[in-house]
Length: 35
Image 1 (cartoon, rainbow, N blue to C red):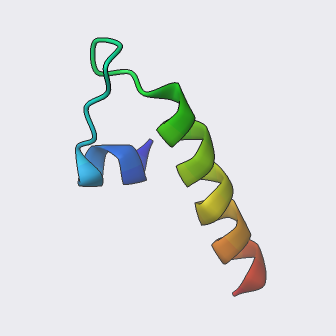
Image 2 (spheres, rainbow, N blue to C red):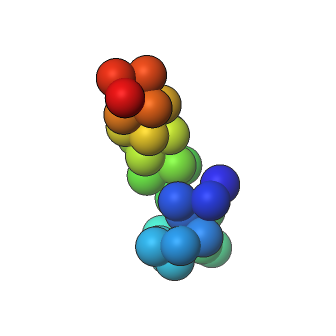
């Protein structure tokens, strides 16, 4: 949620870009796990 709000990504589905939400969550979780 935080990354989406900071980047302010607007998708074609009324602002809800689910692909970006899932991919960014995976990237953040992976980065947190590796740090």
